[in-house]
Length: 350
Image (cartoon, rainbow, N blue to C red):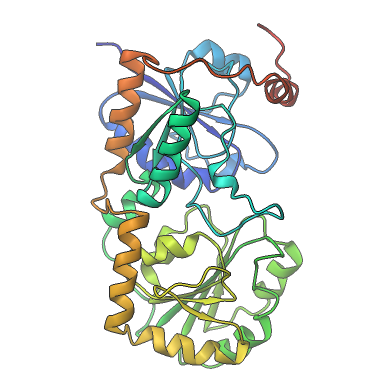
């Protein structure tokens, strides 16, 4: 039996951690993976020596992938293979100025959406019925497989102090990093807790540098392409609207949010910096009523917490490879978007 060929099409550094659980399953069964990096926001230094990169779009097309996995919003139609969206995060509250949530924007690039839970599956299923050009299957998010089925031993803490993980999104409209800086600085000078600080890779570099200067025995600033070890190590999280907070909640751990626009009983939401310490103390107590609300929320966001989402994603992808796009309508030509992608990649062949 010939090997199947799977392409990973990425444009951000966080895509490495998103796709590696899939890669592990693909390679274990004897099939092939290649990586194609596009744009100036993804750094090849995060590729491992064993991972194979295709350097040009011509080389990529000649390789003839049977499926293309994309943790982003767009992928060129002229790359061979079925196109599979595996998402770069959860649908969040980051609504634009016109009241739209870009998570559910259909750009007519994909044949299959592998959704995470009912919260995302149901809207995409309605869109699939409307457009008829793609399939939707609730597989769970393969990114989280190592969170639920870690390969290594339990994370060992440096000491016995509670660990606070502070994460923030990059958008000035939603980020609390600047607002809470002085309070985090103050709290990190106390040895009661240990702090881990990790920001979205697009975070304003001035803010990043400010937080780096806070590093001491109680606070570590971490730049990484894989946030999962930090999620596992921390006891509670301080956050704003970044979708990483959902990943943290899926462990059954509390999150304190600052000025989160969509409040909910599964969060401890505050709007005053002077309330941060007491809110974190409340979270560290793991109140049973709060944990019950967290579990209810997680059932809607990502009920499959068995660490086997990669297997489900691959099974659904292979159905498309083997059966073709049976029952799907032809996609719109998408001329303008495809011309833009051709220009960006410098590829004009038919």
